[in-house]
Image (tube, rainbow, N blue to C red; front, side):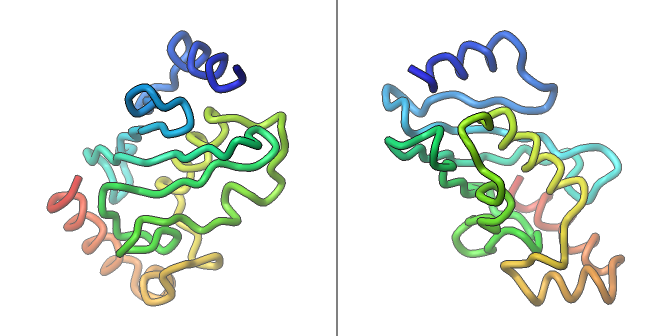
Length: 144
């Protein structure tokens, strides 16, 4: 019931550059998209993201992973898993899919090298931001 309400709210008030809908008939599996923000290395990319909801949602945060490959310190390059702390820290039943989309969009605007799941990418972002940006843009061109 909660997920149905959230779906209706998102359909009526979706943020620009984001979508989120159930994947087929299963209300516990959603596919979201986020469009990369202009002025970031991810500009022009469209990123597919899987949301998997536990039966205990909204008391338990959804599992979220990028389907589209992305060069980002907070996303595992091979699996698309995001840094769990981004969503689960401070999670509670007052938070929702819209909140998750906002966190993910913010993550694409401002990658956090201090909470990485890809240490090499985080080091590159800290030590050579121009090289990081060039590689992130290349991955957008190749995958998104």
